Length: 515
Image: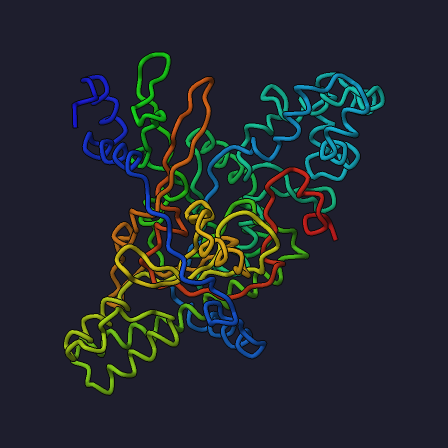
């Protein structure tokens, strides 16, 4: 391939922690594309792909978690990077077109009409009213005369409240009488309820954008003592940023690198899959993973807290059994023990033994089982599908012929294949990003999580910048291809555990309001 980078390009590439070879592989991925995920079937309760726990099991694993987690280091890992801009997409569209004509709101902006009618309901309303008063603008007057765009601009613009560019984790989501909480604080409260360690400490890690880190630190400094006192815990809150060496070069439709007005190469973040690097740096026996915007007020938290403990209890129980079997293999498992380990792998971990396994020798079977069991483990909560966009649980087969349970995004599926589309249509559950993970092996050492990524599960999308079409590439997603070679189990969890805030009006749903 002809050399396409000059010396300035190479210096720029090196400054990101990348190499020319890595960037050339990125370009090659654009040229050849990524294979679509081969779906074998939707994972469902009926076919055993998703576990449905009964009341006795729920009680058993919740109690087991309290017992088995004693002395273990527990961490809550929360992806929290990015601004809240998309939450306010409809408001931005409205302010760019509204000129005080009532029918514009009625016919063209119904969501904005709903927002304005219920604006006093939002937890941030008091701040908005105070912000306007500070600028000698009376909220009531502006509403009475229909100057709605100005009211919204006070909320969104940087010189006022700046909600359009603040991180979602620092917006006020929920009211508690005369106080309000941000998602950051709701995660602190959740952590205190189910991630408290034996010594009363709670570890939380947030991945944030560089431009927002100081804002997160400031908010933590403001509220830390209050929550430590209120919940009788000691908070250990850390932050990290997406690594620049996970950035990916942008190309045009001809797959040639795109440059900015100053002639510099354009790189884009590699998506949430890049966070496997951040997760890999964490040191804990048990890690809860949950998105920043999936939080609810205290009156709704009970179900979430119970099921977090249940998933963790089940995972720690299975991990203990897997570790016991691995030690047995190390000591020299008998044929009868190998049979028992096979049963555990297939029935308890839902692992599929490779084709030709039955023909292997005793030693080869032991090696195969050892390899299958000696991996990071995760349990993923799954909610019944309510039409939400995004990934779901499937039984898949990779390019090496290995069948496994995977979370698959619709962008990874060949929607033109009727058979694949039929499997997609048969999916009953949705991935709410509700994960509990263990990242240590049976000898107490941490896995290098980067070794368990399936690099063939990235995907490519197109975006427009002016008249130019840019192709961007996303790394295998954190809970998709980045964990493709983990041991994975799916467990059904109640819909009450999934209440994300994707648009500002989601905060008007009863699940986000005071009880």
